[in-house]
Image (cartoon, rainbow, N blue to C red; front, side, top):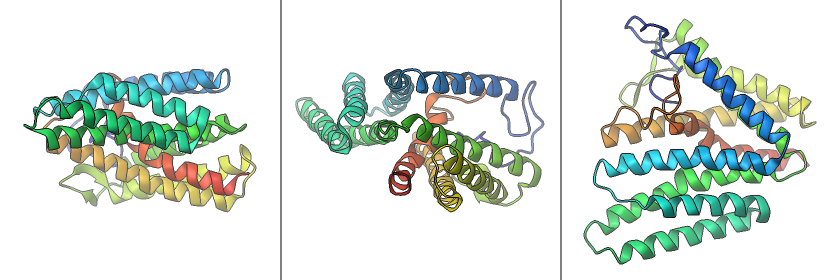
Length: 285
């Protein structure tokens, strides 16, 4: 989600094909439906194919961040980052949490080692940015592979994605209809507490429903999952907003019409992944 995302209202009249939030709704809905079909189609055919979809999508997000950092003369090696991403996703799916941590550690060692031989000027700046991208989005994305590993992994991933989408839709509706009180005017001027309340309600309801229906869990477990995920998704959204403000750019990308770049779709998903995996690991056996 970006600053035009649906947790608030704008005062300016909508552009052609747009909405009160500044989004091109027909394009956003079309792209969203296409992404949903791609995710569900790959999940319920060949699981490893879904991992390829994740790798490509997150890889685009890595490229967007590397390019954005480069606009401020911060050097991050794209090829090494993409190789590390592939190693983390593959390691997590085929080897579990230990392999994910090992792949991440090796990625960091390679990134720091290579940068060492490029001179001392800007080393801390470049190395810090490189490790940052290795964590966000690459390491966090590895948890979707952990989520996918169990026999019911496809249902777990669908539950995770559906709750996050519910946050988006619930926030949009509540923000447009009732949004008045700004959540963080400096970081993300269009987000409101009313929009957050709509997101929370939608996440709790969808979480309770899907955990009980798809995963055989209890309604209260799904409600807790939804409540935790909406907080994490909102924090992830705000973090991407503050990254863009620090770098002095409006958007990280324009890949998806009506949505922005890949990172504008991944920001909330990435931060909700870890608690989702943890809670489902505790609740569902």
